[in-house]
Image (tube, rainbow, N blue to C red):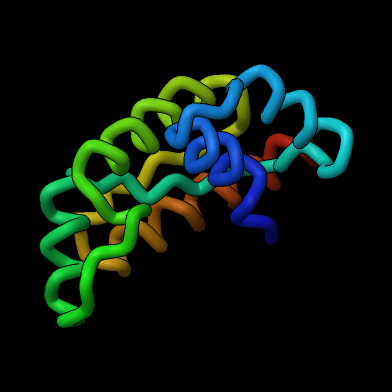
Length: 111
């Protein structure tokens, strides 16, 4: 499990660093992920959830920054085996989707 592979590219890229250089660096230090599980959520709802914590928003939790992060994730997801889960749905529904995907991949690997 490694949540940093694409998040490094998305968050550092949203800060203005070169996406190409970030990808190249990732490729030299980390194995490519077998599967990316992306929890998709509208930026406004994500900020609403963060605000419920009662803490001040960090620089990584500002609307425009998160929009750019999301754009970068969506740009790179097609390059990898991935599942996009709707983070507005109950956890159980997303877990079911993930397990069905894994079961399908497992069966495909052995047929």
